[in-house]
Length: 95
Length: 485
Image (cartoon, rainbow over all chains, first blue to last red; front, side, top):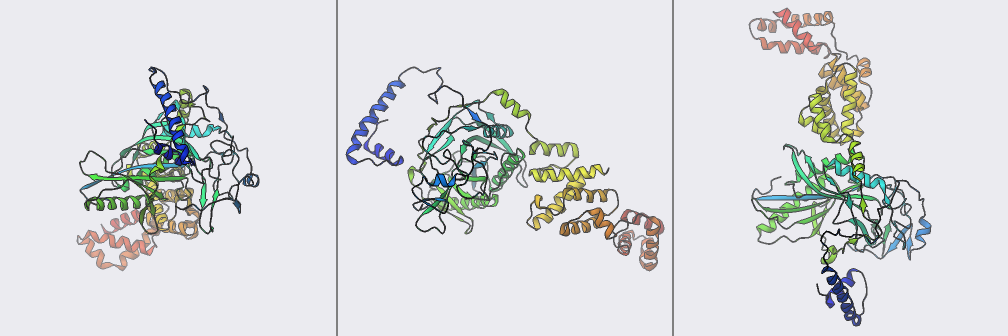
C-alpha cells in the first residue's frame, strides 16, 4: 500500500491530530518508509511461525472478582477541565 | 410475518449482555446499576494516563460458561484488541474488545418460534469487551454531561449467523438466548435497563436468490417487541425501495418506538474505521483445557435439557415444556408447584402444567404481570392442584378458588374451608339433593326413561346448582343413572 497526502490527512483526522498543511509531505515520507520496512519483513519466510499478538511473552494475569474501590468522585472530577452537578461537562454532543 | 411472498427476510442479531460480576472487568470498582453518577469509578475505568487493566477472572469464566451453553468452541488462545474511536462516553478513546481471536466461536442455539417447529440458529462468535459510559443531553443547556459509572462493565457480544427469516424467529432467538443467560446466572437480561441489548442486521432478497441483499443495522431496540416491530418495519421499507427500482443503502438506522418508524443515523463514512490492533496492555488469554472441562462439569441444567426432562419424566407436551422453561423464574415456579402436588401424594405434572400455563399465565398476561410478580405463590398453586387431585374440590370450584387467590392471595386450603367450598362426597347428602331434583322435574325424568338420555346433563346441572357446585360431579352422575335406570 502506498501512502498519499490524502491517507495522512484521513488517518490524522481519525486520530484527531491537527497536522499543518506544510508538514503533510513529511509524514507521507516517514510513513512510507515505515511501510517499506514492513514490506522488507514480509519478505522473510514465516511459515510455521505463530503470529505474535504481544511483544512480551507472558500469560495474562487475572484478578479475583472483588470490589476494592470506593467512591472517589470528587477527587476524579477535580482532574477534569469542566464539571457540573457530579458529572463531567463536555461540549454538546449532537447526534 | 410474510409481508410480500416474493421476498425472503434475512436477519442476524448482535446482542450485548452485561455480566453480573461483582466488580468491573479491569478494575475493582463495583459493577452495579443505578448508582449516583460517577461514584463507581477509579483512575483505571475513567481512563487516566498510565493505568493498566487487570482482567477479572470471573468474567472469563462467565464467557466460557456461555460458550459451552451454546455448544460453542472455546478458544484456548484468544486475544484482546483495541477498537479506536472518539466519543465522550469512552474516556480512553478506545474500547478494549476482541477482534480476530474471540474467546468463543461456532456456537448454536435452538429456537421454538410460536407455531413453528424447532429451528437451529448459528452463533458465529462471542467476544469479551468493555461497556462505555453514558452521556446525558436532555435539559442541559449548551453542554452534555457524562456519567462514567458504566465504563468497565463486562460485556459479552454474542453475534448470530444470518439464520433468521422472520421477526418471530428473531424474537424467539432473543427469548432463548436470554433464558440461557439467566439460567447460567451470568446476565439478568433486562432490556429496559440495558443489561441485554440487541442490534439487528436486516436485509431482504428475492426467494431463491443466492446472494444476500444489502443490509441495514437497526439500533435502539429496548424490548423484544420493539426488535420485532423494527424488523417488520425495515423489511417493508426495503421491499418498497426495491419495488420502486431503487437500491437499499447500507446504513445504521435508529428505531423510534414512539412513532413506530426508523431514521438513518447519517453517520460519517469513516465512523467504522476503527483501526483495530492487538491490545498492548493485555497479553493474550490462554485457557487450560482442564479449566474448560471443569466449568463444563459444573454447568447448571439449561432450558433445553430441562424441557426434555419435563417431557421424558413428567410426560408433558413439547409445547408445555417449552413454555415452562422459557425463563428460570417460570421453571422454578412450576417445579415448586409440582413438588407440592407430588408431596401431597397426588403426583400429576400434566395437571400442574395445565394450571400454570393456562389459568395462571392467562391471568398474568391479562394483568401485564410476570411470573415473579404472581399474586399466587408456587406453593399455593401446588396446593390448589392437589385439592383437585384429591377430589376435595371440583375443577369448576377450583377456578373460583383460583380467582380468590389471584385477587387477594392466600392459601387455597384455607379459602376452601372458610368459604365452605369443599366438594360434597358424602353420598347420602348428594342422594337427597338428587331425589329432590328428580321430584322437581318429572317431565325430564320421563323423557330420559323414554330414551332421551342426553337429558341427563340437564339433571346433573340442576343437582350441581342445588349444591352450589360442591357435589362431586362423578358421584352425581352415577347416582342419577342408578335412580333413573
